[in-house]
Length: 97
Image (cartoon, rainbow, N blue to C red; front, side, top):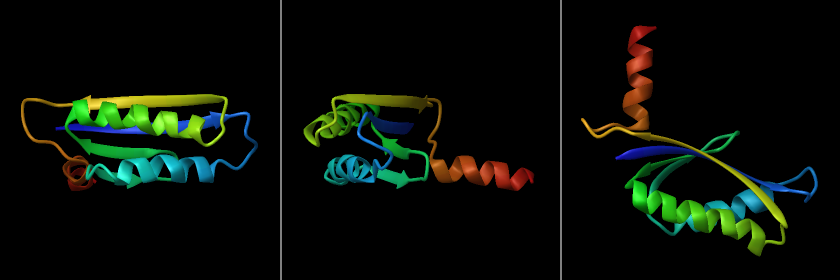
């Protein structure tokens, strides 16, 4: 299972981008993928191929909303030697505090 951190920012639409973010999240909600919305981006967990497909749709949703330029940043944590999750990663750090 992969964990992907994603940030999508429409460029040239003014200071407020929450309506574009909401449109992208609506796309994500239709997939059934596990995700967490944060103040600086979104964390998605699941099958990497499925995540990458939905990232493209989320990116395109900003153009559908009227943006003429969109900056999308993706970080992928794809661990294949054992199961991983956001919760497990956080717990591991907290245990060491």
